[in-house]
Image (cartoon, rainbow, N blue to C red; front, top):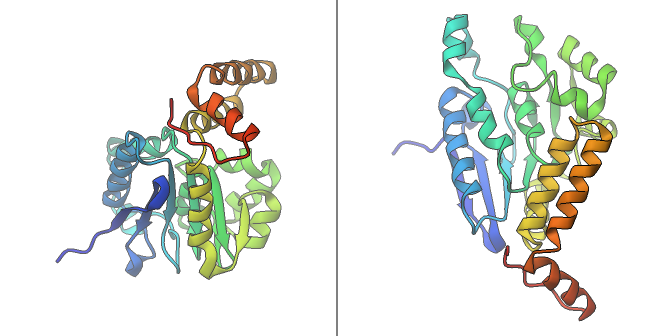
Length: 258
């Protein structure tokens, strides 16, 4: 029986768990894996039962980068015609909150994949880096752009130019990860956060994610205007009225995404 290279499970309370499953090659991101991952994200994005998504590589490794075998004979036109940006766009355009649970290596494309998440929970064994320079390449899926926006120019340039790795604590201090936990708790902690988010209004979650992601590349006043409009729009939802009522009645809110 052929082994699944990626596994998608539906958990309780509106959480979906995506697990990369190429342990023999440290979850290297070959074209097949990225294509299947994109298909899953597109499906979950349109699934009303999925409220939040956890992405992991398992207990030992997140993803050690792209599959180097793909680079041995590839020419410029070959890489261009793959249009791999569409696979990443499926994650970028996902409206659902994404929590990455990172144990072990998150290098190259693996680090870029983790940065596509909204929240990153790192185990103490986690190692982050963009080592493409060591094989005569450079990051090609956001490593030179997302990393700058997250940790600033000089920290990012050191990682990109040297190809050095940093551990979970250093990543936490730089602001690259949301929190650090013991390795055995990483996935469960990510699921716990996902379950918390899944209990909130999906409309509010979507608006927060959309405004935050768009606003970072906008002038401040334009971003603030976008924020105000989204804030105002939420007052016309049933979820907002339910949330306010539940707060005053000291009970859990029953959000319906309406």
